[in-house]
Image (cartoon, rainbow, N blue to C red; front, side):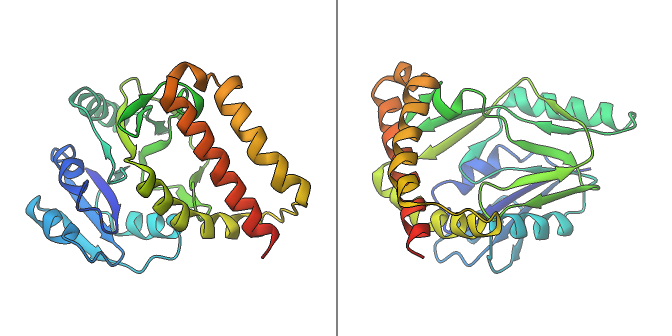
Length: 245
């Protein structure tokens, strides 16, 4: 049995398309953290089980959701992500095979990311493949933001990508900065990061050159330039706030 899990908060723009792409799962589980728009009502139309749970950080929210899932296997999807028909077929095949295989594996799913409506093929997007499909046992989420899993299970990579409609426009990007940076500061404190003023100046510049030139973002044209500049800005905000906290 597969439980598809989506975390939400004010995702009325995305939730219908997301859940429609997951309608084949045995269980649809939406964990909402206080939406004030139509997210919950729209999710109910797709037969999803809705759980309300206060948000502290992304890892904690995912761990809570996983504990509520009924399936032996879980598939995590963000509200701005979609499963294609080809990926659905591959996931079905993998789970069917895995029920006969010991030990099990966790699975990374490649992502095709769209930024300002255009697909990013380079920069961070080139090798982007987060682990999202795994047996519920022996897996735990860690880190408040940009969360990852910890597990002793081996990792394999699926062939077919999911679609990721990451950032709509500048207003949406600024909203993400406001939401993510406070969680980034928690992670930095937990890791004992001690930035100097030199880091505040140097790291944003390094981030831009890394994404735009080293990771070939320049080949993505205007979108690649926008992504590199805004990623550098995000780095500046993160280190500046941490340096002054």
